[in-house]
Image 1 (tube, rainbow, N blue to C red):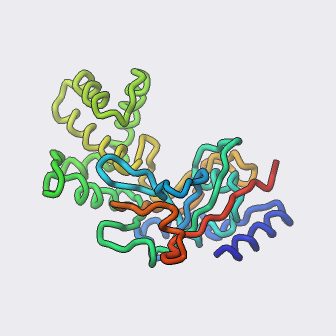
Image 2: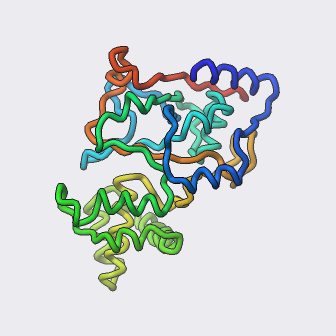
Length: 268
């Protein structure tokens, strides 16, 4: 993988052009399958410390890492500007970036860890598994029916408008007390309040915020100079796990589950 990234960087430096591996229609077909069977997945992140976790760990113990397959991003080499663009991320000029290559055969060791493509239908299944009141391992109040109802294009539009108002109130969407106070004041209808709380559970625990498109594909922002804005960038995937190991544990030779590659811009 590391050698192939070096080859891709050489091509980018020589040609100044990015050639995507898949067409827009091919990306849509891959996303529709909803599963990730590739051995190697990758994530672009700001440089991690040895005691950090690969993904974002929440109070619940859930840790999520937004990834894509090595196959999807190989042609983009390790240029963080291009990778930010393809993955719809926010570019930070002064950040120190790295590409982390994950060997799924060594990384995902138990049934509580899994990687999936976040389409609406797949996310419904994950929501029922993780958040419903049928999950007896946690104190959940969300019904499977409501968790499925809010993971649709139609409700996404409603949720986005609600979150616009939430942000105007200058509240922290990840603070449970703020969410509780907002929902108590904002909604007169009990059913609408329950729908919002179900949908916001996805945001807080998995990261599917108001911009979540539900088609399993990222959208380019056009900021890199390599690709136009608002087209499919890469196939998205999410790795969800509990009790994650540290970066130092993952890259130790005894496990060898990840390799970190420094990511430096070619242009500018």
